Image (cartoon, rainbow, N blue to C red):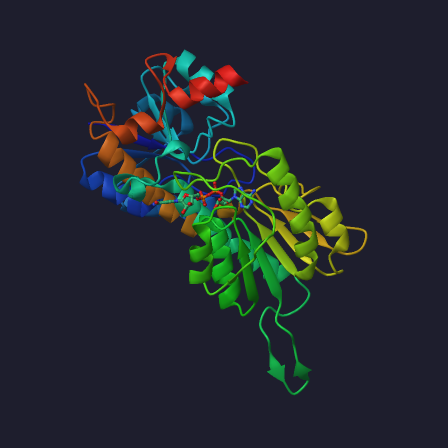
Length: 372
Ligand code: NAD
């Protein structure tokens, strides 16, 4: 019987787990044995008993490595060297950000599948779309974090002690995380405004009830609906326009990324310096000058800047539940026997397969490695 193993996450501050008890039951129904490392779900509030009740076996980390045909993780394990040849590793492996890992996994003979590389517009791939499920959680938490760090109310409140003005919230980058941040901040009563470089995102922003920030700056869209890196002139013009716009807001949440590329700077030091004391900036995308990951800093004149690239991990129940559904869909669809189907011709599998048979097989990753 094919064994699917679940490893405890080892990345610092990571609280998610790759499979929940509900996910165990689903995999068991499709004929897999599931082996969960003791304590793997503890930081996401899924205890060992819940896994056992769902039909999982429990084991030490070494047992999970030894007995599993497929290993499920959220992020790459720090002891990845323990993976034997022929095993399949499934996770958010960030191979474009860390191509050296792909090289190591290939040398070990591991088959690596990375959910970051999923072709997101294919309807068949959507149940496996972990980038979307995790970005949705992160965007939600970004709005809550902003509300907590902000010294005023988000909604307009009319009380006997007077009327409070609503907070003005700007979200830069209106993909999955940005749209959820807009929707959540609006539910909390803030006046929300969104901005994205893609034309198509304007309608999405409006659908959350937010205003659309119009910049005079020339920007460029892209044929496939994904953002591309702006030309140097366009990026400079955008930065100048945003530096003028940002200080009008009490709260700014940034989520802008370019798939496989470096994140654009959208809030430079000059914009932070012009914001009012008490303003809050939450940086999910790596778009804010001086923001440090997982750290809250306050500038000399009182602007709170929170570097928050890993927010999904801070809502571990929701994030793990959604992630588990994504990996169950992937395993059931792409690895029905616990290994790559013979004579495979599958556009989703080809897109997510990073290493196989001792080689780095993903074309985009090979190009990426060559251009570095
Ligand atoms: P992402 O996390 O890669 O980036 C977030 C947002 O930042 C994107 O909307 C992008 O346009 C924006 N951005 C990039 N550079 C910018 C800049 N210089 N200034 C302002 N904004 C900038 O994106 P995502 O949330 O993963 O989604 C990306 C796209 O994929 C969106 O079009 C989304 O609708 C689409 N998508 C489609 C599906 C589907 O069809 N099922 C699923 C998920 C995502």
